[in-house]
Image (cartoon, rainbow, N blue to C red; front, side, top):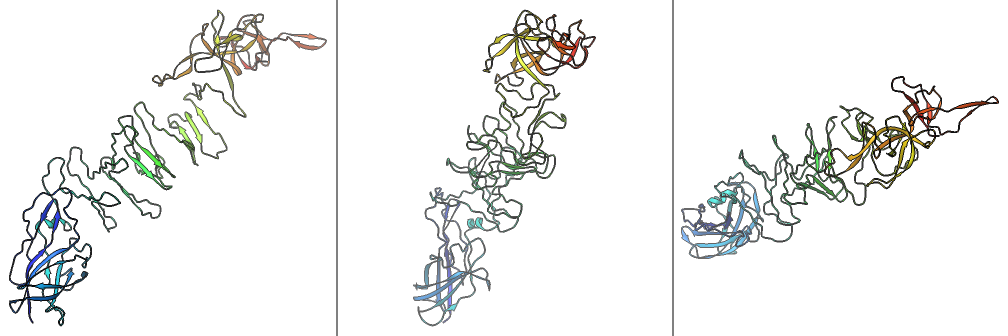
Length: 564
């Protein structure tokens, strides 16, 4: 028998961009496949009427020597990627079909005989073999293979296709919705096998306005607008779940309108960095900016590092750089079960506050762990400022090395106190509002009445709001010029070297022990007598030992204050 197949066409039902298409059946001479045209395209809701399974309807007419057949015939259908030769796609579907007046119709690939997704955008040809009646003899392969052409709008799904249109505000050129409400599934899945490829690429070509190459939104309280995963790790480098690149602006920007949520958050369930930034220039690898009271950059990790910054190998970079231009904090740390801030090994200081360039010895320096020298170095700009360390609390130390020791006191009596004056205790003053320690009352010392010497006036002191802490109302002690009037405060040198007022007629030489003179606030040498060849000194309180002679202009003498 000589069979001839007159193809009416195939119905491939396609749901694409909200329109339902059906193929137009066209009868032609010989086995030809006609193109599909859109018929009665209508808007469809956001969800498809029926989930597609890759099957399609095939219709044709079978003739034997020009005479339409009436019989039950066996058909074999196979899908190929070329008109001749090539590779078969999937398996072969064998079906017994009733042919009536030459015409027949059947459903192909309904059991995924050609695979679950045989139409990936590449060209396909259908090869048909037939035998009539069913079960008789061998199959006759019809030639040529039939090219499967798509409905016009289905070309929008072919590889390299471009979908373009004028869509109003809030609309989408392409919208794909997965209506499954549970499980891990995808509405759009992008994959590339190229080493430098991109699974999903978004590009906003406008030169102005707020545009987004890729925009993600999640309505779930635990959802993510954009979520990236990378499972690969090779050598010493990292691969990223989400990468942002820009030649003129930020590669990745995070915006948050929530008052307690970060603009960009990194979560890491293992022991690696939650947010990783690597910078090769002078700008920070990771930078967070907030115009309100929220968090610019926040990192959370259940077992590793919340925020990890690396400045590379350049000597001028920063692993992490934090700046706050308002009333907040440049860096805020908090821990519930461990250290809020921990510093690891370093070839230089573990922590340095101060640039170390403009002020070589200015700031706070905490050496790295294990350094055998100074554990904490704190200095003000001129090394005589106030204060390198200020606290209202007690300081405990097993061993203390110092050059001078001072005591705060309040001025008593009717006389003002000046620098270098020797003072004696006269009572006790109430503690300051933020302290629990009372202060001594002091006045000018003399040789008769007020001879309980407690120190030498170093400077007048005032208790005022600290510079830059006006909003918090934080108070601190500051030295001030001028004489200390009754009720004012003074700092007394009680141990160390001080310049002390010498009595005008006192003959003071280096090494002489000094006490209060008859002139209030001044010193003189202890009086001595020789008895039976022994030198006996008077029993007055000793303020210290003279280190030189009085200056003829100022009348001040350098004294090592010992208070014995």
